[in-house]
Image (cartoon, rainbow, N blue to C red; front, top):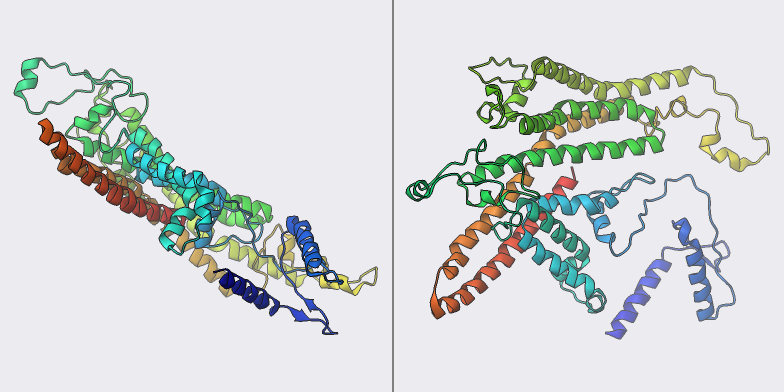
Length: 517
């Protein structure tokens, strides 16, 4: 094995040397490479150490060269951030000096995963596995293995640990631990029926106007929902809405990250012709929809005195949004109003019209401004370039030339488009506009997977409890103890294999897709 390692090292060294060039005298090798500025001193120390160990009398020379080429992107990582950076690089690497989204992914990735994997028990299993790999990091890393599956798990140990911790948090919010609820603070609902009514009726309905004390459960869902028949209906409505809210916030955050890139590169044209219409389009349509969700939560209740604000009169957000986009008028039927507040119909028409105006704004404004700046630059006389010092090297710098395109001088109007044909610019802008408009709709709907996978995970856990472990718990006597021991082992294997591994992998892939939006 030692010989194999030595041969591979020698092969790697000679492969690298083959990339070098010979100088004119053919007595030394020349190499050009990109080096992080902060690592130059480290490289000089390494070269000095190599010279001393080899016994060479000629030290290597390290020169820093000036170049006008765009350097490759280098994101410095450590053992914690390396896995998150790998997730980002799997989609694409940011251009030089653009914002790196990996630091934000450290929070958003495990959080969106946990929304789909919200279970206090399953999250604890995942967190303990990740914590074990983190604590045993050095001995596990020393054991070199070719097992790809284990290497993937070990490489993402910090991601697994954070996903488990966040899943414990969302499981606590959902009040869900192995499909059961914890009654920590006591339910805020009370049963006001007498004993005979309870015993003679299979199902009874609790009236929120009289059976609810008006103060919500301190953290998460009230445990009373665990035994209610309409639990799935309630959780569906709740998780569907928070999925859309998280999705809109996540997409808006991504658009604002682009703003910092535009400001850094002083690309005013992209700010006025891309960022502003993109934000208006997203806010006026989808952020407005999330505002309607909060209004519906707050305004409609069983304790409201006005009949039109009773829960039965609450309009559907989906139907309201569809009618808004189609400019469809809805008439009031009975006491229930199709609108949540006065002037809603007029406001919705205004929002849709402004959002539609943003589409040609995104499509045409930037190409027209670039075309205009090019025409102005073509009519300007080009002054002869003179170098006072007589240094011919100065002429190589295109940024010093007096004949630089006016598009660059006009606040970044020609940023990245100096050598493109106008037809290509129009096509490129058209593709981006169509992608953004359609993507805003499809991505918003795509965030519903947060609700779908969360519901599927909770239902699978409940089925596994009722169909497997419940049979062991219902047995009595010493036979029941033996049966419970065997059934618990079977339930534990299915829980880890299906609900933690398979469901965890599924939620991981869906989270990765949402970060590639």
